[in-house]
Length: 264
Image 1 (tube, rainbow, N blue to C red):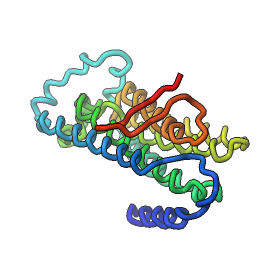
Image 2 (cartoon, rainbow, N blue to C red):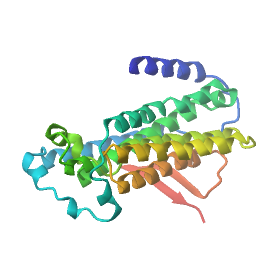
Image 3 (cartoon, one colour):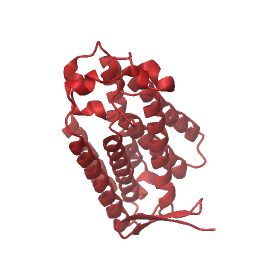
Image 4 (cartoon, rainbow, N blue to C red):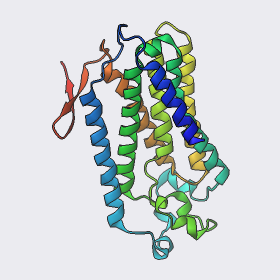
């Protein structure tokens, strides 16, 4: 199924890439900017993997030493949550949102900016995945189900058990939802449908967050931070690349990473 989706996306990109070359571009994305973003994201991913590797595997003793009384605030209320069905449903949101931004390529306005939209889509995915992986590796927070005595030990000993903060599902869905809504608003600024699109963009990650907490995969703080981080990435990337700026912030490629300029 995943191969079929990948092939379909490739066809859409191929069909859209050279359309509207002479049209006025809403965005400007250089190969240097895209390459710098990708390189930075790869470094973050490798950093997260290295930190996690040095921490070592989870042991039975590690699980036995966990104490739910050490969990503070509202997070302590979810340690008894566990639902495979909720987890599988959250996966539907995570996988389904991947194809949504490609719907722009079915319209003439979207095809006029196909290259830029696709590169920004890649930037959003790369930044979100890289940052999420780095933070998960650096914090090593145990998922709520690790504290649940009714959950199988085999699941608790899996490497993903120590990747609770912050929620990758939520940040992923939020980043692409906000990205889609931002692009739609730029392409169709006079359309009343933008309010419907933004409502969906706000609701989809909120539902995903609820499902991840219900599934016992994340604490409430995990999904709140994931929502905020993903939303910021999905909204700001198109803003940085707009040819007509509606803000005073610009992102540039800099030696060793990315740079940001604020104009007074």
